Every structure is written in C-alpha cells, then in structure tokens.
Image 1 (cartoon, rainbow, N blue to C red):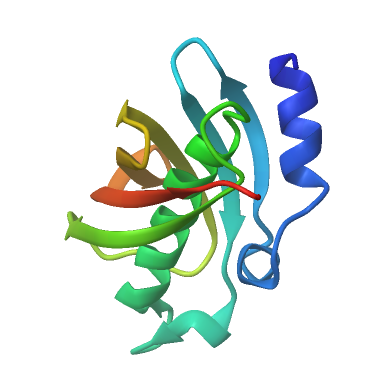
Image 2: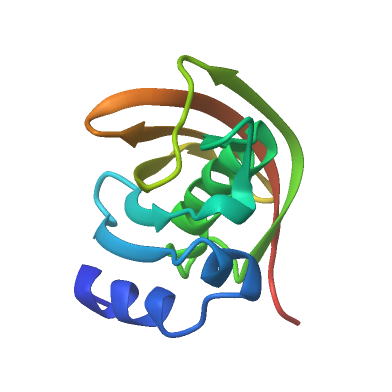
Length: 137
C-alpha cells in the first residue's frame, strides 16, 4: 500500500468518535510511522465560554496516535489503549486543530506512541500512549 492508499483507507472508515471531531487524515508516512490529522470543535466541546474541555483534547490525541499505528497494516487491525498521559501546554479555544501521531516502537503485541496537538501553530498538548495491538483472526 502507498501512503496515499492508507490515507484513503483511514478517511473512508472513521468511527463516530473521530467523525464527531470532523477528523481527517492529511498526511501519512510509513517510513516515519507518522500520521497528521485535522480536527474541528464547536461549542458542544467547551466549558467556560469557548475553552475546549481537556477530555476532548485527550480524545483527539488518542485518535491521531492510535491511527498512526492502525495505518501500518502489517502491525495491526485495531488497538486498545492501555495507558495514556497527556500534558496540557495552553488553553485550547474552540476551532481548528492539527494533530500528529507517531509510532515510537512496536513489538509483537504492544506499541508505544506519542502525539502533539496544535492550534494556530502553537502546541496545545502532548501525549504518550501504550497500546495493545489487535489483529483479526
């Protein structure tokens, strides 16, 4: 599969959680094991006016990291997040986000991932994750 094939595959099968954020995969590199995605929030995701609630920030990061590894068809068909740590750098306002996810290391059944979420080219949050690699039987 080419990187473009993988982008088409990802963008053609998003679950409702990614669709809720209007998620779209914009760049994928098998060589670097990285995925870039765009997201968009509206006021349903906010508290205190237009401040995006941290759980939704975590959700976007979890998505971009998980699909970075799901995009590698030889590794898995799906993942189960075992652990995620998110560090928030600044307040995120309602609007457009760009996320990047990367496979740091993948073994036979476990992978280690990292990700960043940006708004207006400024880092909003960074995360690391440990996932269980799931393969269809």
